[in-house]
Image (cartoon, rainbow, N blue to C red; front, side, top):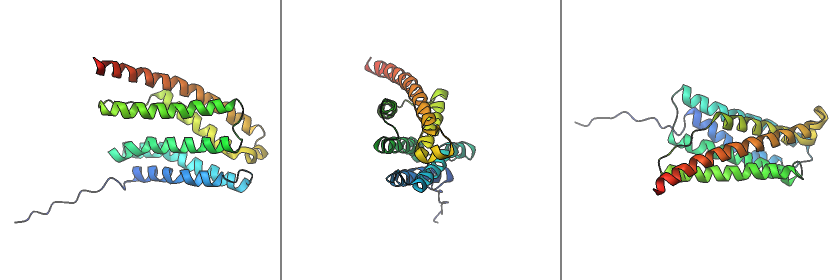
Length: 199
């Protein structure tokens, strides 16, 4: 007698993961729109897409926790989607001159930290060690996303809110400062595990 087992529902297409996929799709869309930095319509559409993508950063985690939709795929893709969105936006804003001069250092700090933490997470994963997200890191992400959203509006935003670019750059520096703090915190934790592993 053949026993028919119920099919397991794939977690790949649950709501939490769909929100993460949406954030990944938003990356090339924002980049494409920022290829026309002088086009105010393109700027505002880029802002709208970026804001929706940033909101999904909160929503996918909330949905995963609330409706028990956490999955290995989601845990892998979520930080990747975040880093791609931030890195791509920073590079485009540097390319079009929205971020320039000394503020380029803030962008460099943020990008370097993302690479550092990604490498650290990959190494610690081999040791079966998780890297929990601290409260300060969550604040860093929030400030970073707000800063980028304001800067993506760029000159178009200046017409609506004079001082928009200055506000965005100040927030970018605040995000960079928080980035340095959290990067040091993660690095210190990682080095501790490396030393313990070598013993």
